Length: 305
Image (tube, rainbow, N blue to C red):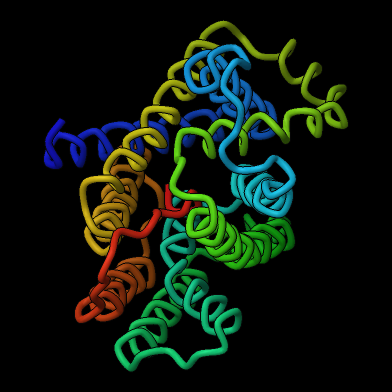
């Protein structure tokens, strides 16, 4: 499969997943945890059958080494889906998640004890300004929505926190790849299979939500799960054919396209602060990666999906 076709698959899979997720959160905002569980379960079953051949093929990376990665990935995934129930608009959700570059830079510099390059520092500042403007424009401050402000604040705080847990996820993923070699399909399988028992603690809430859903919602959830898998698989496939710079630009552009689709189709309130914030994020991303070169292929973090 060519790189152009893989890029097209990334747009189709990831934009479809985001589009369907917004529909689900608009109609059943309390189903976020159930959808997350079903996404994990489907990818785990697929990996058990295809990757591990029903358990006949063992892991190349020791299971004990997955502990930190799984914990970070699970918390980040669950939290990112849960904030939809806290009145955080999808437009703001996508813009904040586009600020992963400054978070990754801070985490990487802290872990490696290095100073960032000039273009990275400038780009991070521009992205941070864009996120701040978008947050201000997305805050429900009118009289009708004042009661939702506290939930919005909690949701934004969670999103900002997951930027850093996602950055640590990428760092841990990179460390495992450098030590044991690149095994993306295996990592995809185990990062989704190992956390499944944790969902037992949510059994009552998951079962109650499942019985409340109508058949049409279940149909949308099924398509969302398939599109989410297609998105994840396409991103990993693209990472084997292009540099991390190209992949990051494609993923950032994908988020921007999702933002436009959300604003047009769902008629979300897109204020001037959202527009200016998006411009800052896009330009900051360009500055951040403009003169950034890599000598070898590096894995793409799962946080960028």
